[in-house]
Every structure is written in C-alpha cells, then in structure tokens.
Image (cartoon, rainbow, N blue to C red; front, side, top):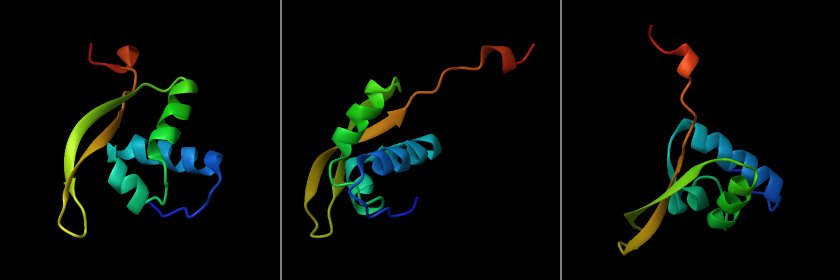
Length: 86
C-alpha cells in the first residue's frame, strides 16, 4: 500500500479498493498509510458502486498510546463456483 496524498475522491477510492483487494484495512491504516482523511466516506462511495464491504469493530492504539474503537473494512468477493474442485 502506498501513501497517495491526494484530495481526489476518485484516486482515494481507487487506492482504498486496491488495498481492500489485498487485505482488510482499518480506518487508522487508511488514514496513516494511504493518506485518506475520511475512509468511511470512500467506503460508502465504493458500496454505492456495488462493492460488498463489511464493517467490523476493532480496537487500535494510536502513537500516543491511547486505545480507540475503530472500523475494520473487509471486501467480500463473490465465490467462483465454476473454478472450484470437481
């Protein structure tokens, strides 16, 4: 995941979607690693595009040592029923 450092919502959505394809991502990581200031907004936009993204609750400790409840976003991919075992 690369820090994108842009205010473009489209670029932020693209970066967030690419990150979600690789692994679940928390609000804290989306902000700190990707540079997305409002991850929940980008997730909402991705959902409007038809992506199935689940939100789980988790806890994270910030740089100052404070524990926060935060969201963990998980992209649900459709099962490839035709590519399975016979």
